[in-house]
Length: 451
Image (cartoon, rainbow, N blue to C red; front, top):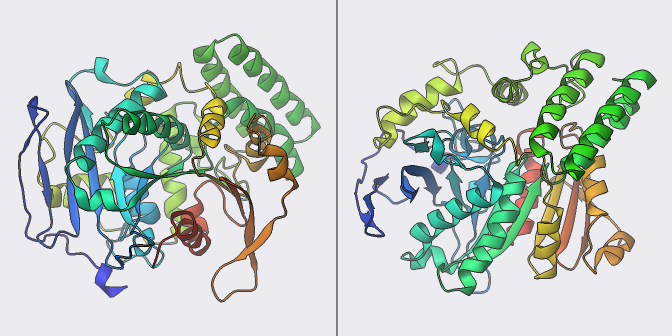
């Protein structure tokens, strides 16, 4: 893995092409072409940042072309360029040391700060924030048109959208948008499918999972479970009535109540207590707790800059060269979340159904120890699918999966036609962080990587 030790300050190639005849867009990259990054103006006054890594393990094979993974972070408003890249699956960790289990061993990696306003992406005014998952998908599709339509190298290999948390909702709406753009000839991409990791597909099913799960693991008693289920019923009614913003507020209340009654269980792994911040009800504070928890799991000493914000706004910003002076990494997350508050609790089961019926490969993977997107909730929404293959999927047997050179059960896999479900043991919300070997093995299977 020594060849993954990428220099932080290589010779940069900077260019400023005119895209769509609309505006000047900036991009850059390393001299050897192993990294490229840039901005695309996806709408007037809305700029999305992307960062593409070329794998040093790349194998050009006609029968198994080299894949690209588009990583979609959750939140909504968490940075794929920062968290997904440096905390989870990218070539370097937050100490800027090579990551042993980077997914770059199995695929090229495309990170985006999505939706606009997240991370290094930015908007010129708050009216340009997206308000729905479909609007986010439209922006991502515009980004892909800019990257793929004139790049025959990228077009040769399949693109897989791999998501985490709220990113799953972006993945399913993006997949539908991609297929529409392919059909109309607007996008030249070989789309391989989606993978939904601990994804917020059906908020109703997740809030109903919290009480029983937390009681099963002794974090709630019978009264705490009853209180949780009562609030879940309120949320169910609000969703049924189309009161999605109100349901978001009730979800915040439920999270607070379950946290209080469980002595601050960590919503991303029930084996741990949360930091104190998790009991506060703002989404920005929850994301800070997520980041802090991920760092603890990595068991790495704090890097010299002291925080990922300092890393991204310091040495990484200096490397990239093109970040506008008035843009700070992570500074607009709360605005992104607030803008999507009316869509946050809207389910996307129908979109998964539609993709399955179209023959699109859909992989679901879920960490056993997660609360916020608990496996109980995932199994519940899967059973609501109207896909004709569901009963055969239910009747299929599970395959035990192991990490390489280990006889300890790492999880289970069930597949039928184009639906695949991974139960990942010993992991919570952040599967690539907590079970990196199994996660890398899974993404290799999903993408059919020749490496």
